[in-house]
Length: 122
Image (cartoon, rainbow, N blue to C red; front, side):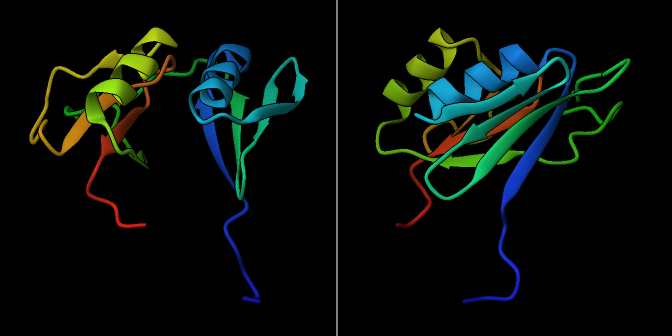
């Protein structure tokens, strides 16, 4: 086993409950812990946490004021079905789409960009 492994991805936000619930539902995870300022979502091999940050400002991708800083690429088998599910859960489609036949850029409820793609091998 590797000495170091990726254990969690933490996302800053204004409302950790809404953001944690969104990611738990989208990725078929389980909200394992929640407090006023933090939600931990357990996935198969990773944790995603939503952390309340005072005066949170979402990224304004593709602009850089404030910059994106990080995004998630989610592997899917059906772009349209995955997009419909994410939007039904509270995501919005980003205005800028560079290759929507292969990568669909969405924004989670806190404004973090993430991509759905069929281009990631198993």
